[in-house]
Length: 239
Image 1 (cartoon, rainbow, N blue to C red):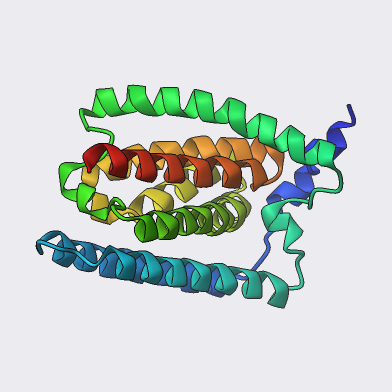
Image 2 (cartoon, rainbow, N blue to C red):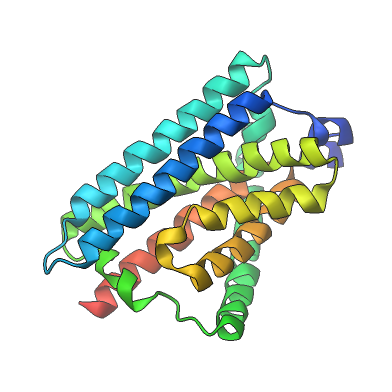
């Protein structure tokens, strides 16, 4: 197998794809959303009949907004967006290869996530977060759309963009992966401190996958699938 298809050159992996000011703007946007999201979810959890549709739609809009912000910054800097997301699939074989990688990674990651949750003594979903799960058919449809959005946008933002920027800044791959994972966990602060740690560990696994593969595409598949499965199955079991 031609490994150059799978793995970009070392210089490409360290290449910065946007200026530091743009990265600060992206981090500020994520911080603002994390803070607002915490307030919003606290308010929703306090009412008897939370408006989940509004929550799903607002989250979708914000995630695509930050995604567009990242893509615009990369383009303004003159870098290729493919440095962030990885080269496009040019054949069915390449698509199936990434699906296979995603499937294998999902099995390993879910197993490790279960072990981490036991060590941290947290449940699969905090009790105060169960109000977010979809109930009706319309909510399930929107949840799936939200899960696909999260897969595309969050993998691009955290693993494709921020991880590359942090690696370029520190000139150290493990540190860059760790910093991006911390940012990923912090963006989910509304789920509570222990879940932030768990999500950051999960993000580090996704970061390792993205760096090894030289693409966030397998991570997008796993992320979207995991969120869809967790939300739909969790909602059906609860209600």
